[in-house]
Length: 58
Image (cartoon, rainbow, N blue to C red; front, side):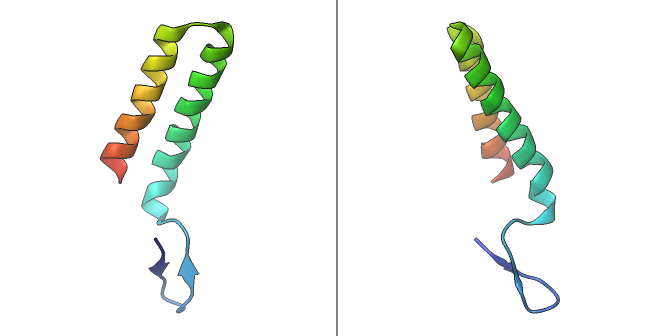
């Protein structure tokens, strides 16, 4: 989804969504790290956190 800015160009991501996107990426990264260590409970926790952030943000 693109939004038209004041100059008439297009931006990919709205500025208000940058911080939540960083948090979602960090949540997924934490899930990957815990997955490599075999801790399934923490993988589920971090994936759920990423899904919740995505649901609230978008």
